[in-house]
Image (tube, rainbow, N blue to C red):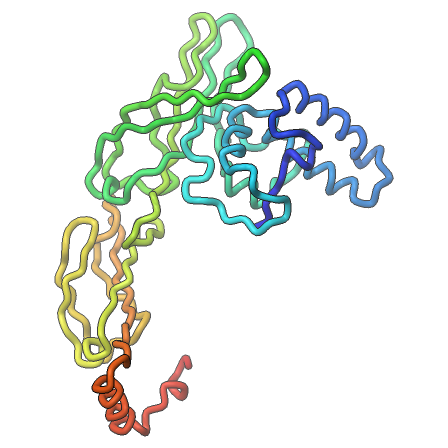
Length: 315
């Protein structure tokens, strides 16, 4: 996707104060408002400006955006790093920009739907505090067993000079067994304090799994690339397969093809209907890096000279 330089869009330096952000938006919004501007790209510029303002006016979103670093240029191909936007507490909804419509894929990749659907405080002397939202990463294994983990969150604050600084605080969080990516853990009373005698808001932690060196996750199903030798695929065998809940002996049928998925029912993420575990076969060919190996492969070519893999279905 395309990187969005929100500071460039608004003509601001990265150390601009929040007052400077607001003034820049008011000036540019008047300039590019579709009802006023005659520029052919006014509507697109106004929409882009609204998205930039939605990020830079919001302390939490701006701090999360700044964490991406300053080396990116507008229009560069951008892939969000794992956990982008994670660990920041968000109190406002993801769609509070200056009149913009749908936001870009870049915005969604960084901020997702943080804050959408939250309960906000009402005017009055006694009002409930705002709910806060944060994305956090956990290990896949924690979803199999449940765990209690210390999770550090970041809350941006503005100093007397108008500059943003990040304050970190750590919470002890119970991770329930069977939780999936995208689900939320509610921490009652850990959001914004209430006004007067109003109760505090809640903190909602949206769960993501850290990238795993062995597994991929889709809903409750877990996938593992199982590497096997050509003779194991041709003749069949039994191999030990690591799963997050322990090693399992898996039978490889004779004639197994690369890409075939072998299912271990119920070995995915636990739940009332547990997910499945899939071993995806990857056939690894030994290198022909010695004279004896080349002789062997030449003999195989002679033995199977009528075999044409490109004539097989799906080739």
